Length: 568
Ligand code: ASP
Image (cartoon, rainbow, N blue to C red):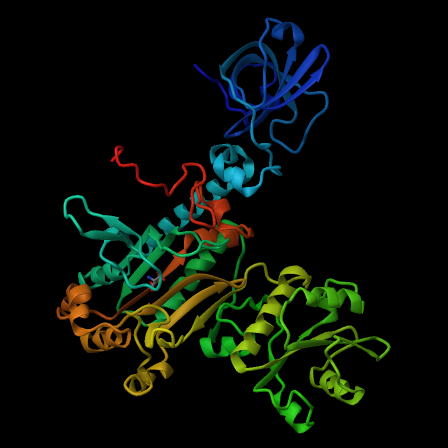
């Protein structure tokens, strides 16, 4: 027998009981004749008290030794009300070391001294920390909630193959050689996209799957080469049906997991508007700072050097939202971090004078024109970028994000602000390869009102697609699918596939379309990203038990590795 109780459950009501506990030593305090130990298990921490006599029989105790003790629950003198067991301690009368530990490479505390590399190398020790353990618990709760919600709404969880043929979803595929079919390869699926569509053709009405997907691309704080999707598909739906249902889904999660009653409808912005207003298709809309186009006032006032620019746009950072004591030096330091030219800033001061960046040569009259145009109040800062259309928007979007991430302190902003971005272009032209690329994926349908553009202006055709963005992060992405052979073939052709290739790679898929394909559409959410956003963290690795680093390596198992012949 290892324990009568766990390390998180004994409280004042247990005083007087004889108990047996097992746990890892978290902390040792030696007070001369007495020794205090904290032991930890999955459930919590309990303080132990030993007389030196008990330990005199020569054994050494170190951090992370796993011990089993027997003792009596007594009331603690100096109580710790922060933990459930903080009012008691165990007066130990018997101890056994179950397993020793070598010296630990980093402290197993909420605020550890271990950097990411070392924590990944010894991930099992990292998981002993509350921070990571609780993340895994919260992830589990989220998954359970999702499964229950979708199942109750009639969604059937169905597994689809992971070893598949190449899937055209934009990223590179991982390849797996086949032993039985020499010279042939499987691909690890990038998503169950084609299979979930085939399920719809198979008459399944609503499908979901919580599924690992694999994409050979660079890892980042919000991206892993293997990640988990909440993948969904429904038959007989249009864009509105999908957005309406999954808005309820997200609201349900916010309520159950975060206790947030999100009542309003999610904002919907078309892709084109998102680019125009925020310079990005994944805007963080919690903070305002919409782009204001200045071309007209530049022209009207003949403002030199801006007049010849294709686009001049600006944002206003309100004094009340700005987290910095405003001195020109400080503002300069902030903006000097943005290693780009083609932008300037102006601050309107309470004494009605101006501060501005070194590259701002406007006279007072022009400065006043801008201040008036932006309806600026004393203390507000204007940031103006100029140049070629696309670069100018991207630059201002970057600046906006830097401000949001580092210096914005707007009070009462919503913790979570989901927004649907809709109507992405169907295709984008890739100059390098001289062919089109799907903006979403090749199975996305064109918008009915744009179908006429597909033949002559494919780049202008908008699609029935949507992304869900929460606080500037893409959490989900989906579309209504093509359900007509001719359109599907045309898209493949635009993507550069010859008829032969279409037949070879997608013949089975196109064939299925001949058997009465229902209209259908769906969406996939990134589970790792969703939990990361809900828990207000900024690194999805913290929610994955055994993540890979940004080079796609698992530092603990040393994966990937070279193949050694004689092991094979
Ligand atoms: N398969 C798509 C993706 O992985 C999602 C979808 O269109 O449903 O992004």
